[in-house]
Image 1: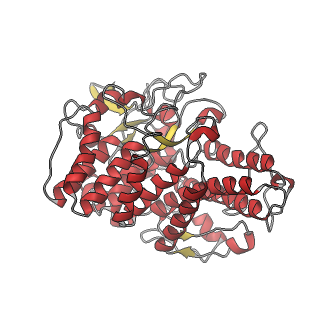
Image 2 (image 1 turned 90 degrees about the horizontal axis):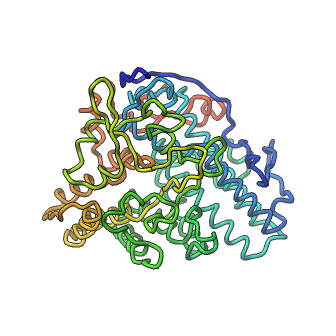
Image 3 (image 1 turned 30 degrees about the horizontal axis):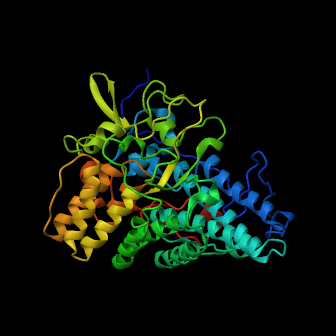
Length: 473
């Protein structure tokens, strides 16, 4: 039995990973492998046909999964917020997130930074080389570039919300990228919106191009992420409009009926907009949520690695079907702890029936509800919230003021999206509640500057033009 003392442990370390010259593609079965460039990206045989370029694109998706960069987002973010506690010393990589004592030499922050920029570099190379290819068809270029732009936007969304101002690399040119300063947050968001608008125009309209699988982006995925970006940037009219476009696409999406909430994360779930299929991951076929959160997997075989904070566990209303379907109990030393059971896979030798779902329909309803509330359209906002509550087998609520509306929506977001890809962490920061909530929860360690993670010191050493975030050396 592990020693579940729920104490944060600190482990610092560095990895010498080049920001711009990371591997372009991982070696995975028949996926394309290209050596990292020394100065500039070279035009290779990879982009001389649609089929070869598609293999390069699949290499990028494989990197997104095997390198764990985006799949790990929920771990550090949930600990940084008020969602999760780490239960054992083994997973030291993210322990300092929970105690809010990150340093610029911290392994976890460095992993996020370098991992995200590796995928951005891959996306940039696909965009650049597809654009100048003379062997690809016009249709092939359009489709592949659209997927790469969606991916680039997704990764910049996470970078800007974790680190604030970041270098804005939109080219695969090493000579340009190595000298980039940190771009203003507003400029990063402008690039994200531009990429998503292009992707929205050129991505497939449904999943038939992908054999019906929901593990690659379609138009609605770009639209959904645009709705989220507009909400974060306080463009509420556009957030509402984009969310409505996704919700109205009843041919693809619908909230699951009562009694089926446990099926939300299945690969063919009609609530799923975009996810990652982790069956290609070396070593096991579970999602990372299965692997780390579930008690009984090959990783957490003597207890869950992360448990819900008592604050989160106690925030569910009586009768909430989400608590019954998405959590389970673990007893240690006479105390019951809840852990996430959103994902159900346990046996790592079997193919997982689930995707790691990054965008799903219930969040889009809550985005629209918040956007409507911010525009004082309370009747429409409460209707959206109650659709989510009805699915969770809860009674309808009412609200008559903006403050009541926003409190209700934040509560629904908390119990609907818990432990999912940083949503709660970002919500606390963007709504201005981080100091009040986390200051009370972590009075000995929380300070306002903890809202941003440190720029890794190894990156500043390589690129002295990069400035450090306040509160870090």
